[in-house]
Image (cartoon, rainbow, N blue to C red; front, side, top):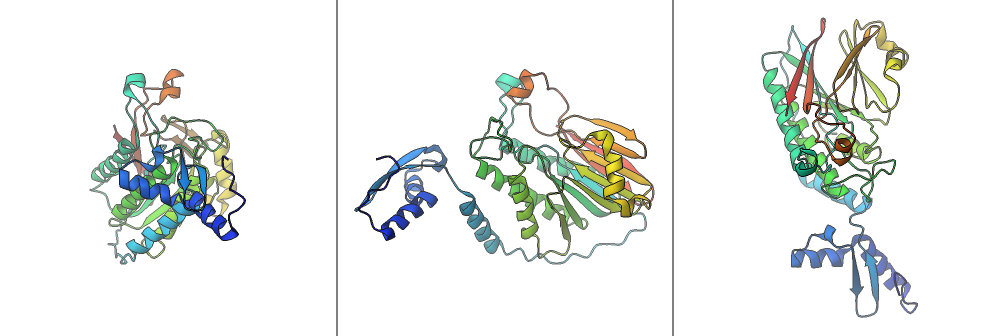
Length: 343
């Protein structure tokens, strides 16, 4: 009878069926007992004393993931104590930008010469951030700008597709990638906030336009009680941050043309434009390094830490250095250093 319910069941019984179809609790219990991964089961037959039904297993839905996140946040109880930081006369802003991480991307060395999966992705964020911090230890840092988003997640749908519907080779289910990204971001922010106040700025991106926003909003909620972390996680495609005489814009890079960014900055951040001598725009998306002065604005595209997958290797988009990048900005003298952690 496929997915149809026998007509003799009562409305109350039908509600039970709907609940089972949404939560898959019977399947989850059986998988936990037998040791079979829930995501490996594509469909199953549910049978009770009064009815039976054939159910497709689509994994977790958004509501279930949301409930699990809320439950986890309640258990964690993130009441962060307020940290008091030293005052520096010769102060610097540290920008850390883990760009195009693509958690969930699958790359096989036998095909592309590059092994990459969700575990490697997390290790590269952790190693890259630690590497940048070790290189700036001698500088007085009084603020940290952490750029998030920018294809942190590889896919945006249960069908392993980007937001636009392009299929991607994936190493984990979409909800697993979401949870993994959330945990490594939390770990990173908690580490950085021990050094200086953290400003988290989110750039929407083409691989994960919806789930990336949900992730950024989740982080905002997670740290809502902390007075040492602030967020700019609106869906705006270009965002700006002022640090003394520095004006820094960020965007993913799949939208406005690079040559138009200086004028857009002058219009969209007009209240800061005239008072900032040093102007920068950090872009992403293309996975390789470029830097160009357009008028008074330095437009810089950042490297990716992610591996080379089948499509990129087949089309020859390969062999660019893999890196996580950071930047030091002096409050008066502008950008004084670029920090590369190469993998």
